[in-house]
Image 1 (tube, rainbow, N blue to C red):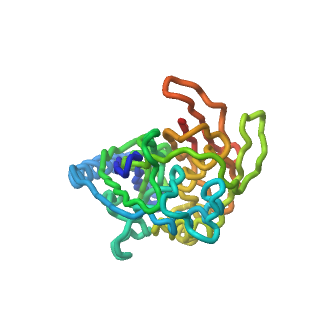
Image 2 (image 1 turned 45 degrees about the vertical axis):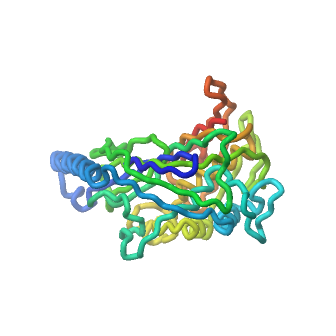
Image 3 (image 1 turned 90 degrees about the horizontal axis):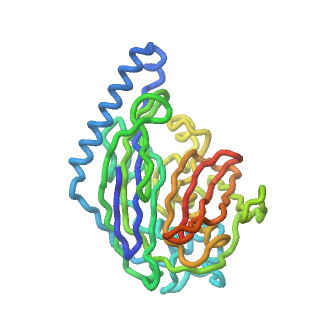
Length: 352
């Protein structure tokens, strides 16, 4: 599913993956022919679900308006371990004053979903753009953001901003783990969902887009979880990160995100088949942008295209690093990697 939104000059697009899995008992009792039939059925269901979503949300735009308050921005910066929002601006005791520009990516703490708890899915997720059953489990898979270049003004504390969100597309795709349909990666933001259980899977790709902020450039900023080390002749020092369950809970609370995979260890292990609480995709996205502006940045960020490739969990020690910039007609671009050991968990390209 593609969802697109607009907010004062920034542009973003999310893609949501909705996956349904064959229950393990059914899989265990079926032979290869029966499993193949089930997978064909899931593929058909994914196409039907995509068609239904396209019809349901055609020409529908969701608009949210909000004042970009400094208190929310302060709490996000502290959750990220950055008592200095900008170089020379300490927000450890007081929120940033009106007029303070939002760092790139920090707009994600605003325009959070509302609704009553009774309106949420069983896993705690907002169901505004949910697909019909069995595509009920979601994950953030990637996306793209662009910022309007100067002289456009960045989003600032105290401004009243507007976000418009709409479904761009719903497309069944082939899964990497077997039969059924799997994710398409692209756009400016990706979120995915799937059904409970184990085995072959069908995934419905929901691509969503939105507007972004015209965030101005700045340098400096406090380092955090910083290893400050060079590795293998890389041109920039890598940054080491490790998130606790408390940190993940605080981000979920700030963004009003009820998805249980980020704070409920029992649900995460027994229902979602993860070994622990999952690090938010947007958290790694913000961390990539923070790393770039602290370590590599050359002026305002122009855009980022990113893709989640493997989950990270509370307690994992992982790192962010960047390659040498590549010059093109569109300017310089940096490949930024989020790695757990040698495993690439998220990768992105940032342009200046």
